[in-house]
Image 1 (spheres, rainbow, N blue to C red):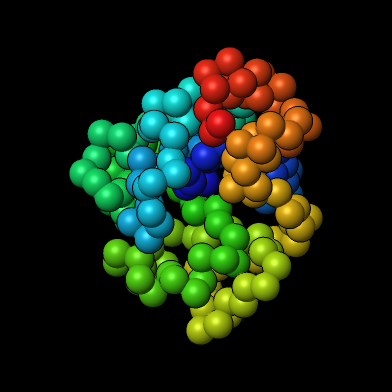
Image 2 (cartoon, one colour):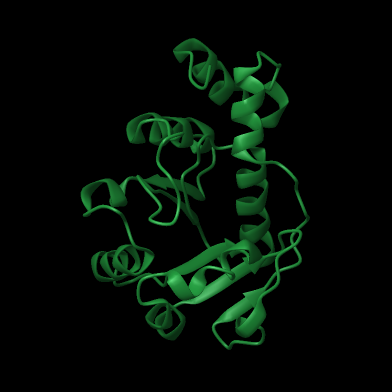
Length: 185
């Protein structure tokens, strides 16, 4: 599961849990991306802070893992390069990409997106207002009817900046760390 996780929240964790329980996955790896080439970096918390938040969020879940693999790769990071590296380093494992339907309007802009679809499965969950377009029915894409959760990191950042209590939107230890470090204020 690739993401900025800026910050990680219950929506990410619920989705990861759903994929573990309702698919054939054994684990979910949270790949913390230093910078998505299709997004601006200006509102991103430092890489190591976002990784720390993900580690805190998944520390008690033995089937979740946080990884900083993209921190060691050239930037911006590209999913195909990360997947290739992971597949070579962990040759005994099969990797899939967990993503929402919101990736499909820009999937054609991803570096070597056809290679991703040729070599990997995409496990896709619905996001309101996004269609699959030309990718509908693609053999590498599996659709899961995960619950629709309207939780976003940008909403959480805005709430923190406005001094709202955002405690119930993320794991307690994550929220405590954010407040202690004065992130997003």
